[in-house]
Length: 195
Ligand code: FES
Image: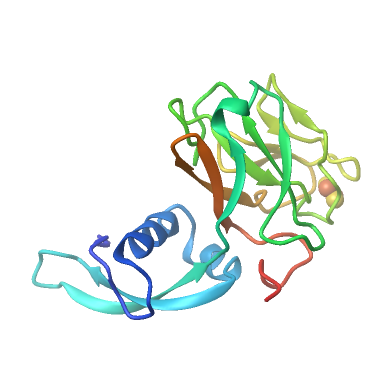
């Protein structure tokens, strides 16, 4: 199904913001997108553009805070930098790292800068300080050994978990990196944003 990024907003979003949101949505399943949503906004999108079947339908997108995380030039190869997002609450600890290899969702000239939540999706074990530069992974979780692949949107490599690690959406403006959203649901939360 084709989905045009020529979006008409109904809720005060700029066309640029809406287009970015639709672009992000394409990288996750509809279910994951919705369960990971925070504050939701309804926009109109065009399905099957340029065809007789073209039609506009409403779609829900989520709006997250936009937060400065780090300067690209300050990130050292394979040295994670920690930050909180989307708030300062429980399980909001994340890491950003420049891995030196292209990764799904990666930003920067080499698309190798990614960010992930530290809470294991199994039972919330902390993955703090578990980044492995040789395998570009987070883990093993100290509780039941789950390990996640940071080059492939945080999918599980091994262990007890069955959901990918939530990936923090990043945008680059000049040398400044911003967090703008989350793929997946943070452990222990019914919504990523507490409101
Ligand atoms: S809490 Fe991490 S594997 Fe169980």
